[in-house]
Picture (spheres, rainbow, N blue to C red):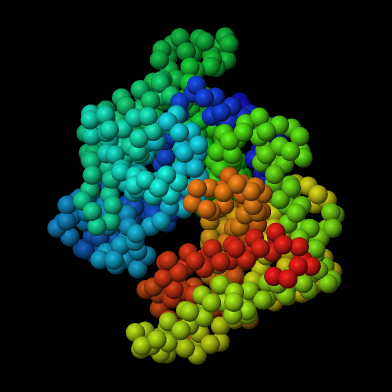
Length: 599
């Protein structure tokens, strides 16, 4: 694909499918992955850590700043807008003066600290869906894939272990290269060092300007060698790291003068290997901050997303990187699963037969048609009405009221836990608030019009608390974007569960917070070795949202009678993951079971 034009952008943001047609580089990536003679280096950046709940670089530096004990230096460091590499250099030193800890410990605490800021009780994160998708792809490629990361964490190792059943030992950069411990798909190579909670650091921890100056030449040399010898796939990478940009430029421009002449005469020539980058066209959060109306905010967000595409186009022109764009992180995750599915049987995947092809667009429509049918919609209906709407509302309501429902049980366990001997004193003043809390389940599906998925947004098809006899009575569409006014739209954009408070309204406000959870429709029948459904056989079709009359708060947030806190905010991380799985399971059961059948 050449420079993105207006037609590409318009079609890109209106079409829900991951498309070969609009992005031929996506087909080239899948073709190259399916070629058993081709090797890949999969380069994983901070995006995979964000998916697992860890901070990106700007937030990591902010967390280091919070460890500076002197209030005046902490204040000034917050205000400083210096380059992050330079800023990391001196805030690590200032934090070290405050804590008497070595720099690597300062960075570890910043990486894993909980939102409460308690440095003695750091998080122990689990891999998210992005890590799972990348691990699945690596397993599908076998020894044709080598894995490299700039991340300090071992989320990818945890995801790989799920599929292999073998403990994955992280490999620090210099040791992996010098001792030849890393090659041919053996482990994850960490260029910037390894930081694991409650363990000693491994390798050189690279974060500050001095670190980059000291270790950069070795990393650049290594990366240039990988780019020359293998195809590259960059995931979760912003391309601001000079250790990446420099070798890419050198590879794409070995002789600048001759290169310019060649471009003038023939256009860009093919490189001996390909460099692909997956990129989400996300808007700048500040772009629509001061918009006067909702329509103006939406237009500015669209313009910001378009700018993200145009801004990234230089990577192809100067660095030879083939950028494949996605409308959301959820869509990017799905595309990586798609690559694994394509490797299983590429001829069937790339087939144009709508009835038998396993390609994304065909599978999506089969899954959506079945989902809408199972909630009582005819081919030309966007949501159930009349008796079908009542049935769907009853099914959703049962998940909140049936003692055999896992959703009901987890809420009930949270109530019992706060009333137990160990916690009764802590929560004694809030039991009346907990008793007054009410919940509603809302089911959203990707929009389908007359049998086609022709817009990238969600449709609210039913609720446990509202019934509608005619379609117009519950006409709610949620745009899939980070700024969507509905938590469901934000969850679909992120590709993971979202827990958010609704903005406080001066007038009467019914809902305080929502847990919005994306869910998938399972199309295949194969099972992975551990007995769970193979994620390659699933396709995301919607979001289920549990809304509460009370508000979500972090552990350290103040309690108040004017802002009653949800009982769900008291459950621990492991139980929260069970709750998310229970919500997704309920939605999946509804869309895969015909409406006439009992739940």
